[in-house]
Amino acid sequence: MRANLFIWLSLSFYALAFPLYDAQGFGRRSLTPGEGRTKGGIHLPLVNSGEPKLRRRGGGTGAIGLGDYYDVTYNVLLNIGGQDMPLVLDTGSADLWVISDRCTDCRTTGAQYPQDTFTSPEGLSISLQYGDSTSGTRADGLIGTDKVSVAGLQLDDQYFAAINSTNTSVIVTDSSGIFGLGFPINSAIWRTVFVNAANSGTQKRQSSALTDSVITSYDEQGPFVARLVANDMLQDSMFAVTLQRDTVDPGGSVGMLSLGELPSGVSNDSLTWLPLRTYAPEQGGLSPPSNSPDEAYPFTWEVFLDAVYLDGEMLPNSSLPKGGIEPSALLDTGNSLLRGPSDVLQAISDKLGGGTFPCSEPHTLEFEFGGKRFPVDPRDFAVQAYEGDIDNCTATLAATDTPELGDGYLYSWSLGIPFLKSVLSAYHFGDLAYPSRDAPRVGLLSTVPDDASDLYKAAYAAASSSGSFYSTTETAPTGTMSAYATNENGVALASSTASATGSTGDGGDDNAALGVSVNLAAVAAAALVAGGVLVW
Picture (cartoon, rainbow, N blue to C red):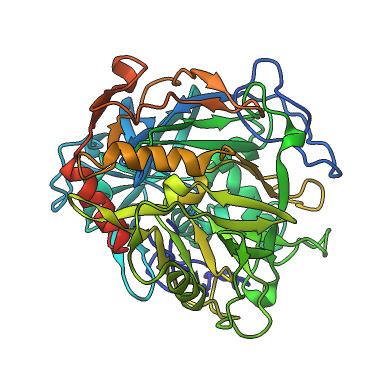
């Protein structure tokens, strides 16, 4: 998921010369290299072949398994103020927030943050807005600090929001909030804290230049992972994600968030590394620092898109964006769908025969980045349209707003869980202050097996007797999940259980799963996804 966009701000003692991400709901939103593994590290991408080597740091690494709510959301355990809390893993935003025990409309039995332990000396409040022009949700609360840790990596005095009122769907997916993994400039909480500190005269600045002040704020006021990077606490300034599959044909990759390097056995050279879209000041981007006038900064994990294919046939480019906007895509683990231009989605629907299509036939949607095609596994492209009906499926697609110059983000696709289950995705922050020294980038490695279509057909055959595809959920573990094998690129694989009638997790109590072959909750979740209703 991704927070809403820009607002121009004025500080009492200087004008903020760039737009920051708004906590109040402006703009638009889409819904819902090094070598190989370094000794002692766990899971993260390094430098692209042909790109400069990563600067080795003296920091640490960590890895932790992921919970999975019917492939609609994935969550990870963070310890906040001494309490373990499962939070939605979200590369599309940069804010950390949790449901507090004072939330008036949450109606959740999940973990809640005890607000009495919250340190909020400034009494800062925030209203986080999510959604696009067709939907919108909010999360309101207070900003403060506490001790936060994940996968053995800890920061004291980490800023986050304790939410006291929300209408988001997060709380119905076994999660207690959101863990945003984006850049500081994409964080509404960072913006609020930064502006407050500047207006109060407490903001530490090393020069009069605004950009210098912004960058030097990251080590104390930035989002969690960005603070780890800014304080050289990671071995390499990156994280990686693999998502397990718990519907249709459970298995796929082992669900994992890795901090510090690539997974064991995965070579940096096996990934395709892609530059991020950067935004010039006239596009609302951060101005370059005075000592490096050619710097350009990204907003989020947005990469340029070459083409889109359905069943091997290239689809026409969208004609909706104006002004020569180059096609691009956001990679968003907090998005349960594949969101794209309405005209391209209509072309896909026409080729499939309409809004629903036979579940019996697998289809492959591919996205081309950097000259290489990355398929969406057929098992992740289709979802059954109706409970008890295995014959009619719908695609995990939904339209999103058209980008416009001067109106925020410029991407036309938001590639969520269906795409990210089909790849190992690696997110390299690079040098937050001087991107020209170590460019921010994304690495992708396809994990779709050559026989994915046959595996889909087998899963369909197994589901025919029950009337529903197999599904399961997994609670977020305190550690990592075990792999039963690795693929040819060294990516850890989870065991496949589609042929079973009912399933349990393979990792004991910490990663217990509950699976049933006909699961009404899973069908309901799938229906929400199919209708584009499950949003934050």
